[in-house]
Length: 231
Image (tube, rainbow, N blue to C red; front, side, top):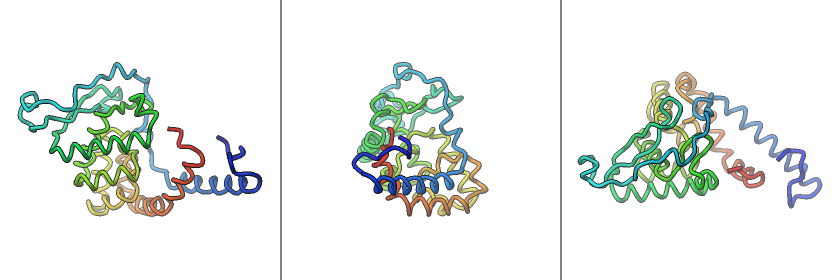
């Protein structure tokens, strides 16, 4: 959709006013979204869903070698760029598994197309991948289940980013400030986890950007509703 097009259901001058508002709002967001994200979403030749078969998320205690009575959560990591590396994290409890399923439902609502296909650009986003990334996110941020679920309900973008990349970004944020300050920035703007390790020396700007994103999130959601998220 172009800004010169007529917005369905908004006639005449109202459409012009809407286009101006949308343009200004998106311009502000673009100015503050300057951190490099090319590494987080670098496009490589897309692999078919069938070529990214993942073992079952839940395995028996014997198969998990005693790691957890509920087994392990397994997901794809980017590795050298081809998303063929499989990593695992123990499933802590039935309650955690329930929260992980809720995180998957959040992702499905946010990205209906990719969740159906199992791919977002070059990134595997099958149910087991999303549950794995949610667990890794919870561990990286040192959050409990409810806190991490609330975070992805705010913005689901961290669930489509490689877990190792997210961890490295957050560690850099902590080095550039403190754990408490880095966590506060992430809670206000979860998308900052796509920034990469270069954010270490830019935490002041990250904090300003997070405050802006938090304040304008309702407007951004409204804009997405008008324009369509394209997901």
